[in-house]
Image 1 (cartoon, rainbow, N blue to C red):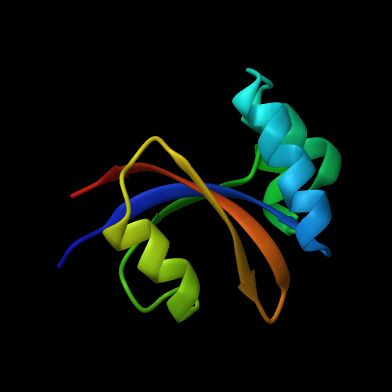
Image 2: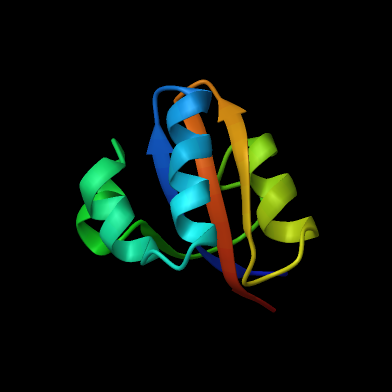
Amino acid sequence: MPRACARHILVKSKQEAEEIKQQLAKGADFSQLAKKHSTCNSAKNGGSLGEFAPGKMLKAFDNVVFKKPVLTVHGPVKTKFGFHLIETIYRT
């Protein structure tokens, strides 16, 4: 069974996600931005979600984590919770 480790930043609007993504592109620290902006409980851990298997997250989230390139920030990805910026740290 494949597994992956990912982190994310969850915000309410696509515009806010785009602004944070621009900061990341300029070299801002992902963990610090997650702690400052993310509305998810994972914010206190720098957005880290730990390791998980397919099907544990929403489909849109899984599609990024298990199909897109690792160590790249993807998004904004819309789910029922808001807009995510997602970075897959590794995949096995």
